[in-house]
Amino acid sequence: MLNSWKYFAATMAGAHKVTLHTQHGTQILQADASAIGRFVFDGPEQSFLGDWHIELSKDSPDAANLQEAASRLRDTDIPVAFPTETVYGLGADATRSAAVRGIYSAKGRPSDNPLIIHISSLSNLRRLLAPKTPSVSGLETPPDPVPPIYYPLISRFWPGPLTILLPLPTPSPLAAEVTASLPTVAVRMPSSTLALALIHLANVPIAAPSANASSKPSPTTAAHVLHDLSGRIDLILDGGPCGVGVESTVVDGLVNPPVILRPGGVSIDMLRSCPGWENVQVEYKDGAETRTPRAPGMKYKHYSPNARVLLFRGQMDAECAKRYLGKGTRIGVLTTKTWQKEPLQSVSRIPGEPSTSTVNSHVINGYRRAHEARECRGSEPAIAEIMPSLMPVPIPSAQYSRIELSDQDIYEVWTVGLGQSTAGIARGLFSALRELDQKGVDIIFVEGIDDNEGHAAAAIMNRLRKAAEAEIVL
Ligand code: AMP
Ligand code: MG
Image 1 (spheres, protein in one colour):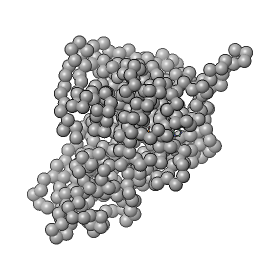
Image 2 (image 1 turned 90 degrees about the vertical axis):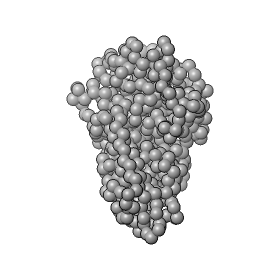
Image 3 (image 1 turned 45 degrees about the horizontal axis):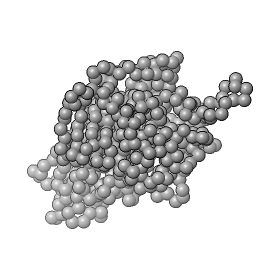
Image 4 (image 1 turned 60 degrees about the vertical axis):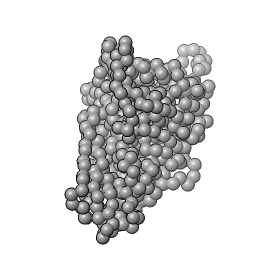
């Protein structure tokens, strides 16, 4: 889709900014996290969990673009799309109603589905949550507004793909639209250094759901955002493809035992290894919801390409595929751990037909950098569990062929091989669903994985079950 837009690169006189314009007026500003400047850790923690600031590089177009995005967040009511390590977010100042309403209208998001706020500093979060009433004597230290149950999670997984539920203070400095009238607010500190720098420069908490049109697969590149929101927002900050590829894990530690409201980049096993979280329960449902879910967003249709999606457990073959095909059905196939690379083509591929395979190498936006300081001090390198590979990362693309399943029944097939690593499958999943949609396939056969294998496996299967009309065990 990206290629069909008329782009032109322009260097804006004076500002030295590389900009890409689309015909609908949505502007893409590129920012390479490694070229924006220097992060300086001011506190004893020497990490993003303590106090920090950024010294922006002078004359850096990346830094100028970052500043432009930050000032739009501060000064306008039109949301700005930006990369995080999970997926692209659609951000707005969480303290201003008009700005937050802009998110709901750009996405077409139901207003009863609350937003996650993104912060760049724990001290700012504490200031946001601290009750305004002074202590009686004026000398007592007020209680920490972050409940201690979350300390082990914060020290291990922040910054990173974990969202925690916190009590909403009264009065609340947040716009009412952020929390959709719930008494709690969902908060996360992203580990993408570009996202952290953007929030820091905007100097406000940023409400940010995924930057897709509601119900569509979440975006993991700027091109995905453009496809869904072109003409609906003014600015996309392009920091390259997202490293994790599925959204954050959402947990509620305010109830006993604590619960997982949405599976994501941090697995249940990783949570269970933290003190106080050994008995964490699963509160989300993968299939259709039968009652009001605690995370309101989980009841909505989600992650859905236009094509029918069928999720399989076990080995798919031509006989099985034929049951779901009509004459001329255009087929998409998404393989993961065990299916042959071309499960249908290998049955009876038509000789001489074109087959294209491309692997795009991308440099993903910074993830490890956010954890370097902690790792240097020898504390637990939790990040290696979440995203083991370093950049650059190949993003697989569709391979085309035509096959004959039985006499004269010829089908066009596009196959995306997501590879065998769970992290790679998570990273490529939404991109693959979107690419197959753009090829115009009618049906997508997906090879499921074992949800219990840890890492992002449960999140992958949760998203696939929500996208699929059926899960078929072969
Ligand atoms: P998204 O930002 O699109 O990735 O979705 C955010 C998810 O967090 C949705 O499933 C929301 O329902 C959920 N969420 C946000 N705030 C709360 C809250 N206060 N309580 C429970 N779930 C929440
Ligand atoms: Mg979303």
